[in-house]
Length: 448
Image 1 (cartoon, helix red, strand yellow):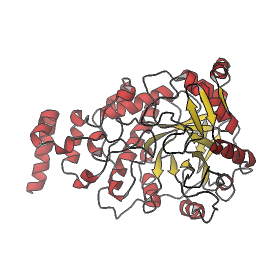
Image 2 (cartoon, rainbow, N blue to C red; image 1 turned 120 degrees about the vertical axis):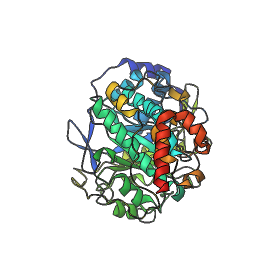
Image 3 (tube, helix red, strand yellow; image 1 turned 30 degrees about the vertical axis):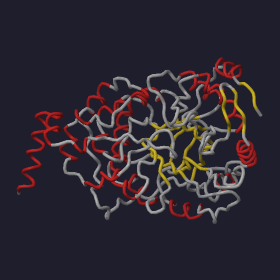
Image 4 (cartoon, rainbow, N blue to C red; image 1 turned 90 degrees about the vertical axis):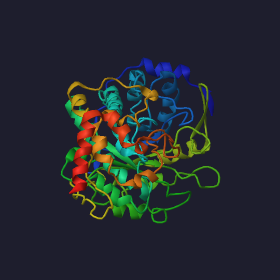
């Protein structure tokens, strides 16, 4: 079907309602803070325009108002957005989502304000954290914020595994900022690529250690293993349920919907995702993606203010309508096992020390972001930590491509830091006397 939704958008925006109850975490599951009922994510990934035409769909009420009726038609309760412009006002769209009973999972990065696989040490800096925290400030007072993702698929192969400590660093700093600013306890997690050789050990690492601030509160898994008319066993879902059993935080599919099928996607996996086979471990999922583009994962095609639903949309709607959530608590685990930290990684698993500017941000708050214009991956010049910690770092990080932590798992940002190629003189000029002292200390270590 195809029709204009502008009039309906404004009608939705004009209708105010009480705020949705916050979603809390107990053990490895989400719960409605008012009713106490188990909450299963029924959602889609939502970023009209993708990386080629990056647009904040929650910063323009004509965009979100156009699409929210379709979210309601699908019966969704959650959307995920990969990038927002933290200079815009999002109150209208967040109220429209609230009125429709829809929660938001939000990635905190933008393409050029994110941790770089090529040089994570430099890209982890106070300028970057200011952008992250400015986004936190913009959204934390909405009760329909379900949670934040600190990164998306930063680790996407064995070569990029040594960026994992930076995920924990951003999780830690974000959780500290949320507490310092007096916001409610909003979950902070990570959206992981489905890399078979790293699935469990990366998940365990992100949930291990004595620093509770550095542990993820939730784990999203981008998983496309169920294709077409598959099954719980054939798809590998059964193995993943077994593998993650005992994991102490909620897990859900942050992307699903394999399109390696003839014709449209049947979404037969929905019956398993919301079954008692998976509910003890998984808490629902988000279909990739709402808008059609060249990747052919879309549920709808958009032209201006008009939306045309595709067969995928109708198939997903039918499957969701036919599938109820498990009755009761879904046999969740109120207490989980303590994850063991890896002992055989070929690099330090220690969490990086926070940039010098973090304490000021925690005390005074972020100074406001720069939206999609933010470029922070080369902004390590103000952080003496970068010199003292990464000048002797494992050179294997030079082999990595830059991270794609915003937009989607199917697009990449090619911008990366060039600071690794700086000479010692350039670094001294950038860091001043603090850097000089750090380098002297390093030299003494190697002389001994």
